[in-house]
Image (cartoon, rainbow over all chains, first blue to last red; front, side):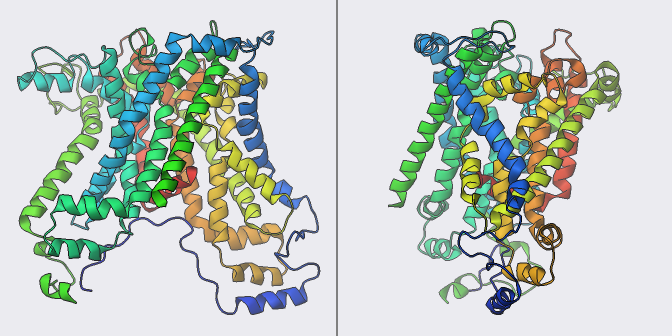
Length: 338
Length: 294
């Protein structure tokens, strides 16, 4: 095959694994003969004379996972039945009242709607746009490394910095409105940062813009596995770029697309900073743009009015939503494979 | 093969332009690349240019130009004199150094032990780590804050660092890297009578260099760019991290000069950008590693 094989730009860590050499088993046999005690790797037997050694090495990870991972979740479940205050003080059990309050709380439902809407709009775009971008930068052209790196830079900037920059771009007298007015496309400024719907859409745009580079690199790795011969055969048969994209590229990176969909879906439910930066610390006019994490912080962690019990109940709702989404994605992936 | 006849390639080592495809297709590709370049990097470049403008030049509005007419570092001097940026940077650096240090030390040791087959309880530890990754941070942050409060760490840099002092994802990543180390290395080490620590330090760590870089980079960026958790934990100006300080500049009623805020933003991007340029090839590996996050 004369076609130049593009070098895979991304390798998965650990891919450098060296296949075990033929002499390995002989060395192992020798080791077994020389060393006292059970053979390394024998089932269930401890290799270590000091049984606590492995526990010592893993202790920090165990503590962190237990104290700052699993315990907080169990504690959240427990707290959701109390009226604990974020800054301390007496707390008592209140039964299911936090949950009944939540079901009748229109602000909670608004936050849920915003979060779900976020996922519904962002996920399809985030699955597709970075893939198109990856196809664009896949071919090894002169200067392509520069473009790949440049497209990645928004990933590096913190959401706060990017949010500041967008705030000024989208302000009433900001760059976008000024240019649109100069081009006579609009008469008066578009209220990107004061209309609650436009704030939400702008925040979604920000999320997309910041995630493009990340998932582009992700897809580049997957594209390396799509056989080049298929593309060549198809173009010989006269298939255009669009048809080749839908019939060869998309099926070839299907698994990666499912994974990106799942990751961005979970990510959409976690959105906070974008809303905070574009919709100010209130989360849009009257809090109309608050997402679930935003709402949890407002009701659960406010030093004066906060109710950690109620905040925990909303946290449980967020967890259930995330879990539901993950299970749905798993199911879809399984159906897709079969 | 048939394709040979259809698409002859030059035998020269340095490719010519026509080797890359038809001129029209190439033109379209580069135009698209430039368009995306403007969309992705444009806002950041605009921020940089605006920070170089003098007080006499408009940043916004119909009269604002894109390029500064008289480039000046005035805004950078101002940001250091008006705002405690040095304090913010110091706090951010402390969080980053603590995080990178603890993540590296503990994720490598735990990942190493988990890659060893022969000890009881390994499976339980594994399940615990996986379980701890199931809960999104946002759904446990109320409880986390109460824990930090009980530990007396509210409004302290240590409180920002502590909940993430070693991430399960990084442990899994390191375990994968150690599993990929060939067995012969281990066996030769055993024969030489090396201790566990020596084997870890001299045989395994050097072989897992790539994964170590990935952990370092990911930790650095997430600690440097983090916003929600510092916002919850920190209260006083003296303890604020850079992202938190910047976000307050914008929302404060003082109405800071935009050039000054933009200068602050540029300053905050620089360390990550430098890290990116130095470690670019490991950066991309980190993205694929992120897939393990599920």
